[in-house]
Length: 560
Image (cartoon, rainbow, N blue to C red):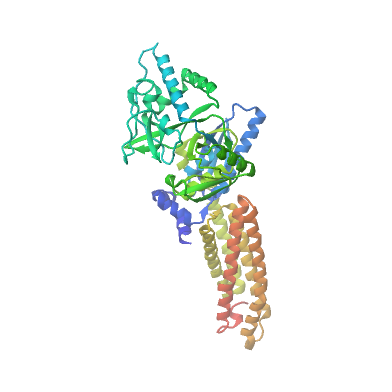
């Protein structure tokens, strides 16, 4: 209860002064006010649907918005607001408790994941030679001395290993044992001083296998070189002579060696060797095979057709290397040890459970092939004022309603009415305690307008059963000598009705949580918590207090 009270009474300035770790801990322990009560963070996204027809654009955008909602819901961000703006841009508002970085990732990434076999090392070496020659040929008429910047070495990607690495890395002195220093072909490597090879180096990552990589300050030079028309023509000619066609692909993450940052560069099959989607499921677990890339992993379980295709692909290419490509980059690589019959693939999930859960949500719901760009990055840290005026109005109305209810109950039931009013506070505490249990179980309840409706429903039931109980006590109270017996008998007769009413409410609310989405889930969570709080209050507060009071007080002093 205390974290929730602290969160709700703290001003935005107070919350901003907390460190990110403190703020995250506070949100994780609290029942969080939803967007429609407290606002949220706004993410602006732009989509490129220029290649679609008007009808196709509408279908692609609708599918994209539905994918965003599904991902955010799977991650635990319910009741997000997705509003279309002009020129194919959207506002996505998430609650203040949401991690905007992970929410942005779920909005931006397509979730497409494919498998590609690596090209043979000898082929890579021959292609590099052809590229070096093409660069020298295109540069010689202009200056006779093409760019030589960045002839330093580069590093490989942590967590990868390459069956073709030795050839693809180029020549050079062996790497010093245990130091992890990159090896560079230098100016005397293939292609001379200005070719692609002068910008590449290699490093041993695992099991004596090398990868080629590019130092951070050389990346743009290499990208420009690979995009040059002469180089692209050389690559096309090479692919025609050496099918299947190959393509260069960058690693999704850089690595650091010797104080410098490097980006691995792979040459893999251009066409997809296996599209693993749609997935049967993506399960978050502790990392085992990919432990070097983070504490958590996501295990992909392929559908029957994909499982059979993976088994055939792995069986035919045992000893080769496979690249797992996601969002146009190589996310991770693996050595094919033999046939993979169970259709399971483990990929790195990150250092935190939230990162892994976000990745699983992305992969389980592949979005249409639409380029998405996040706009207004600075606005992601500024709360959006959704429903800023709702809280004050609702609080005033609630205070007036409870005040009138309290006055009526006190006038009619006097001391028993006081028991009921104090019981409302006890009910709030019990409701908060049950909400906290939901939080501990990993289901974060947002107290939105739907949740407020659920709580009002539970409060109405709480009030109704107490008024019925008090009226029944008045009707059953007998002579002065049998007041205690009459009260105990009345409470005993009320108990089955109280249990039946609350159990039915609990079952209905569980059903809403299980099968509902967005508002229905929040309504069910809070209705369940309020109903459980009402049941606990009726037995642990009202019943026990009346039972103890009647031993010394006459029933006429408890009600009129």
